[in-house]
Length: 375
Ligand code: SF4
Image (cartoon, rainbow, N blue to C red; front, side, top):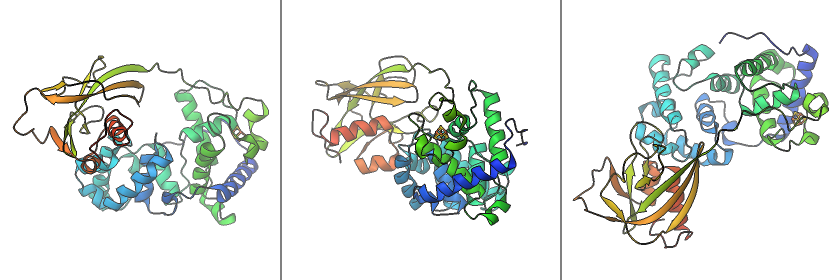
């Protein structure tokens, strides 16, 4: 990526002071997260991919399970897509999981299994964008490479008073600042805690813990003294937000069929949203197209509603009516590629949609109107 011209020059002395203050704060306040205990680029890469759009607490458990099963880039490259997607189950945005496996194959085939150390080579891998490349290069290899994620964008917007509509010009400005401010490697020798990796992580940590989207804790902020938004009383107003996309309402009918301690699940199509994941037989009553076709099997409802579940999938607001199901015509044996009986543990291995896991968890906890035979 060519280096953009700095749009908001920061005096060299101010730059050094910012780095020292923020990195010293990070050394004191950083959370002890599993992926921060290593310099190995593989687990750092996995954690960064998982953390995009996902809460830290949700990532912790998945991260440990993923690395337990696929501890090296070679093991990820050799894994089946189904296995990788199953390990990703619950994190959403399944394209990331598929891209990880393809990128691991690229690293094995083109780089002999070692992570490349240049931005251009990393960006050539499937699913690796400027943020992920910056994270791997700075955190694992301590190279002076910048990154910008939502947290960094918020901190910079407030710190430098960037009051602009979101868009490509603003994105370029934020990246220019990130380039300008990331410490050169030599600083790491002068002040040990100031390094490219610590600086980038400290910015993200400040955005996560202090400079939060709502009610930033400016009284606890190490950068408060030079923050434009704080000085002008606009901390909560910046950054400007993109106009909200109206949520789409989706109504579903979800059937539950038990057989001893197993439940019937069907597989979603290989392409599109939540591709290849397993779910309870589902029919969409609205017409967003997320659940095309009937229940995919000869099923009918039987009896009254067991539960009513709300669920969010990106900008879709899902309301699911959970009903007991019955066969209209029971197949001799369901095609195992499309439908199967599964226990709770097997579902975890197979990879189930978030809505299905939520419905079954509610049933297991007795939140629906009938005791579960799962779990
Ligand atoms: Fe964010 Fe407040 Fe710190 Fe400014 S002073 S960077 S608004 S937390």
